[in-house]
Length: 203
Ligand code: URA
Ligand code: SF4
Image (cartoon, rainbow, N blue to C red; front, top):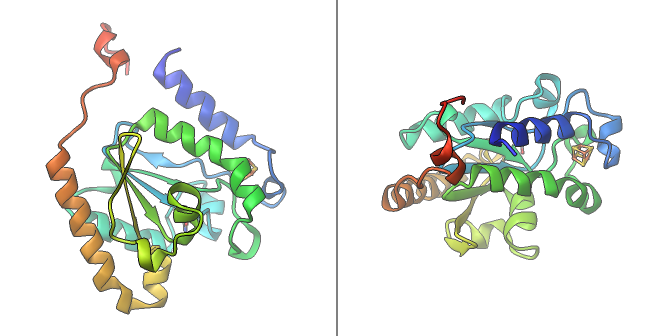
């Protein structure tokens, strides 16, 4: 099936999803956004209030800090893909529970498969728990490269944690410098197989 159709189907499925209880309290689902061909993908925890209202990931205070950090490594928000573990806001911004996260993870896996980023950055403990290692603590695991299935995984502090505790910004900046260096080392990925076969330039 056509690549854009796969994306359309995925976004539509998330918008109308009722696979967990978070559907009952959401205003909007927040599927994710950005460059669908990105080399770099960020994974957060789940939508907060601003995201729930707008349907877009990382647009509140934490999102503005994330934008600045992306710009500090000479990228723009539009260059990267941004997604979350759960696509609907947990009430009161509590952490998603395991059932909610497990119900939602197939969407994230699909996004990773479609974007095929070189590097996946887990922002904070929830992303680490479900993407890298169930038992790893963010403080211990942050800044360490893990290569898995052709992807380079790394964790850093969630920008909301940096807002609560600015002393963590030094370590986060070290992590972002490592990410910049790895991107430069890896270079851009080759084009998708199906893109090679497209003749009418319809995307
Ligand atoms: N925090 C997250 O984890 N994700 C968002 O999209 C916004 C805030
Ligand atoms: Fe569906 Fe995920 Fe929203 Fe739960 S959080 S309703 S699984 S999209």
